[in-house]
Image (cartoon, rainbow, N blue to C red; front, side, top):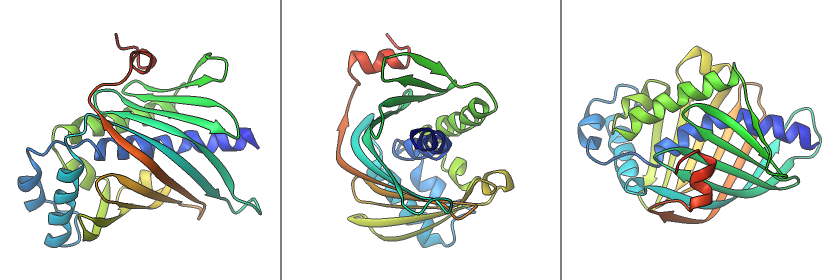
Length: 228
């Protein structure tokens, strides 16, 4: 069972990398980008997306607790895991699973590595690492305020207000659509819920709680990314 959850967790890192970038967009280019966003369904959608990203921007890092529920066609009962995450705009995401087993995924520009409960680092080789690197490149573009990096991969529908918003993302690239059918994001000043529907119909829901912004990670967290 733990092995199945581990495999599914790694498959989610592409989406997590994208979402980490989305939460760290700079404000500088929002208005200009929104005005020329071709993949947003309407001008109002593009405007609200720009407002949401501006709201989420300015947070160099975010810590949160998560509860992940995976509903798979092959299993009668959902798989549930809990843990915490650290998003640092400069480097990537630390995804720590506490239950039902302990492991940490370090997601960065060079790919993904896994650190087991004993502190042993396990490197992930291609082709998965190559996919993560592709997302990392998109992250860098988005962190520069380039929302076209998001629109080039997804058709985006936005609804609600800044106090309670929802984004629905549908892949517009065939390669991405082979893995992901849709992403649904709900939030306010932070991302609160993410629902990922895979191309085969399996769903993963991640609820985030106790979210808090920070300016710089702790020394031991920096070390996981190989940063002094």
